[in-house]
Length: 270
Image 1 (cartoon, rainbow, N blue to C red):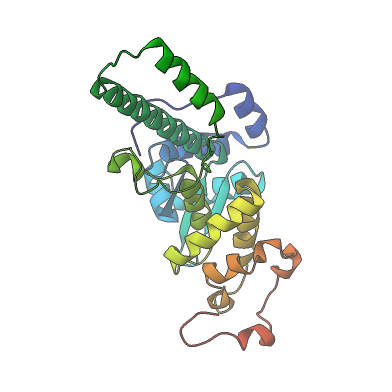
Image 2 (spheres, rainbow, N blue to C red):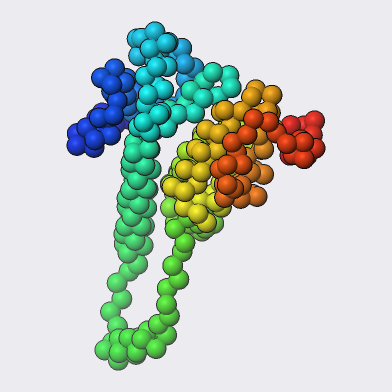
């Protein structure tokens, strides 16, 4: 992630969003925003609770109290792992980071197209045609005009892509969105296969809905007992089956039904 020496701050939105917080929680949220801005994955990052408290220079109990208030008031997104790690996310900062990356890639592609067009133009020698040849050429071009196919925005570069390899290898905006969803899902296993299913879900449902549903599922799982959490489905299966469309009431449970436990095997996969 490239360095950005400033943090975009919207005073009016900040005042509206944080009026429900105490002065202590508001100060904690400003500290958290600064930490998220400096993260390698701008807009979201994960530390143990004691690590967050140490970075902010407060006792762990004070940090957890402020965090509980921030989560209850929906000011920021929070996920607590079973090992005590806490992932915090600022939705606006993450969306701005994705938009900034999209813009940078568009500018790079545009500059490469101009550079390649300039090289091709300089390598072609000027040829003076007779008037009759010019008329004939224009007539032929008019009759043979065909619509130019438009490539899908999220397709991978073709093998004969004129762009340099370093540009073709850049992470697409969709992949960045998929990474943000992967960070929310409560089980990290089989990332390569899971990312394909996450991308399919984003194309079908849209990033906002998928992120909202995964966040709701992660919140529900965080309330499960330690023993029940081992029955969380692998992400590739959860997304492939479209479980993000399930009724959230089904996620709120104290124990895993025996009918589901029977599908669980020794490899910890459904």
